Image 1 (cartoon, rainbow, N blue to C red):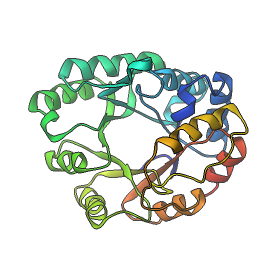
Image 2: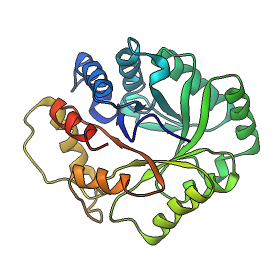
Image 3: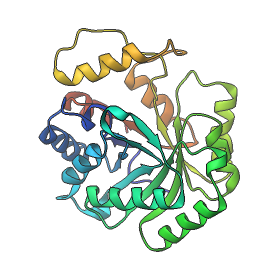
Image 4: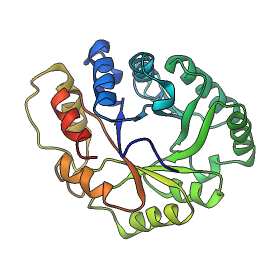
Length: 261
């Protein structure tokens, strides 16, 4: 599968919160497109669907056939209740229908199951997904995660895409999983390319920085971290990777990241 750009923009994190104005998110989506970005990713779990609404608004004036839109299903967020899992056939179908409404499209290019475990990848679910795919709700089925759930998805033979961390600190098992995905013909979208260690603590300078600060305080030590530029470049140099995702709330960072492709 050939994606429309090597760098993708993830509408996630603070873009699903009031810390970033809706107009700013939409402006960044359009600036990303102008800079050559054609892959846009989001999920219903990002701000209880708010990130999807913002991406839909940002893309609606752009040519639909010139962008690759992906979203996810299986995890949802509901305010203070936190995230909830739901991988039954009906839950996945309803999640996808709701996502299409928020995104203002008839179908997405890719639907990723958001962390589905091996026991949740039932024949009944895969059959329902195949029916939804046949109806035009999505083109490619993907698995998003960080661990053994990705190996389980590869083994089913039902997936065409994998969304996984790709950074210089991967274990040998994680590296092998990416090779297995490529060997099976899956297109890999790289996430968390800078590493899994938190960034250096800094005083917030704008409301969006509060989201990053809260995430830093919740994070464990991780295995290491490199600069955004070095991480993206390293991921893109891997033969298994078709696209590397980045996200930001700042135009300057967006344009610098987009130029790496």
